[in-house]
Length: 184
Image (tube, rainbow, N blue to C red; front, top):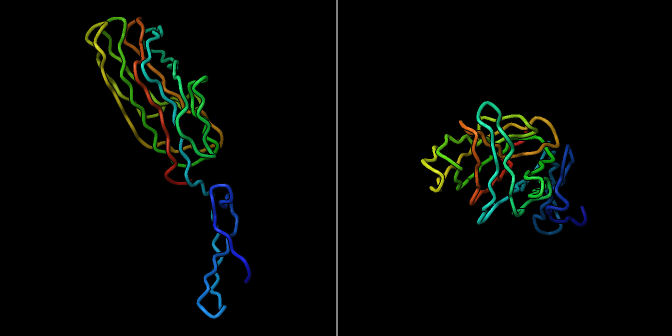
């Protein structure tokens, strides 16, 4: 059969590539199998984060959520995701089922009910969390996670916020991340 080489993240099969796996059973005799991969996206993950944030962002009261801004750093990422803290988003290049989670420590300009929602391609997802801030100085913590089925290639994952009154929100610490778990 000849030379075989190990698969790496740079040479992994994609789409419907065929990969031949061979094993030398001793004495130069090989057992070979061809494996076909379909929509394989191994090691797809990405994140954006904010540490020690202090910039207030004005939000209007319901019913209109607004994209939260102010992420300050890109976290770890794989080949099929592109975190972009300057756009406050993570671009995902391939369809599939993803685990999405967010965490935030935040305060508001006055007591308010805060909804945080994961969005992709400006569409609200069912991953959301709600917390009540008692006043303008108390920092509260909120997190949520869940699965989304990304049915198209190339989308943007974002964190949006919604308040029950017109006031500001300040993200003190925040993280938005995604991880591929299955192809569709």
